[in-house]
Amino acid sequence: MTDIIDLKDGMERVQDDKELLLELFDIFTEDFQRKYPLMQAAYNKGDGAAFQMLAHGFKGATGNISARRMLTTAIELDALSKAGDLSKVGPLVDLLWKQFEEFRVEAERLKKELGK
Image 1 (cartoon, rainbow, N blue to C red):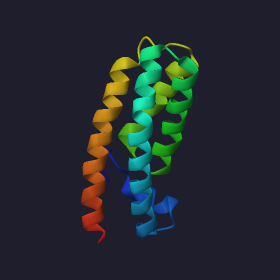
Image 2 (cartoon, one colour):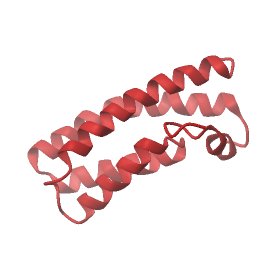
Image 3 (spheres, one colour):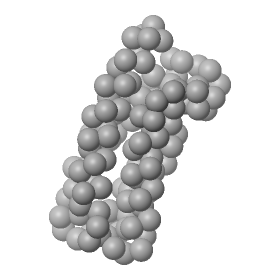
Image 4 (cartoon, rainbow, N blue to C red):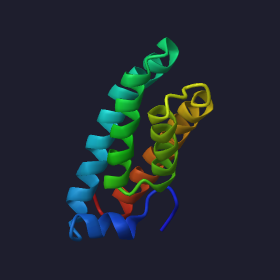
């Protein structure tokens, strides 16, 4: 287990179906790359409602794939945006992208390790 992806938890979530888990990683990657720029735009515009919707969605998605580091950041982003405070989210938005890059590397490593 790493704190990037908790493989044990992820496998439990998909009832040990490694192909499904790897497919979920791919779906998440595509979805994140599409939605992250929307989060940046919402932050830059000060659109708290749009930002909170995206942060909440990332919280759920990262939890579903057991992406621990990203989940921790998404939880913080969700809480701050729910409180209506976007003043502190800028560094966390940047951190989320860095963690996504780490997630992609780890997901690729797991694909090789698990035989896909």
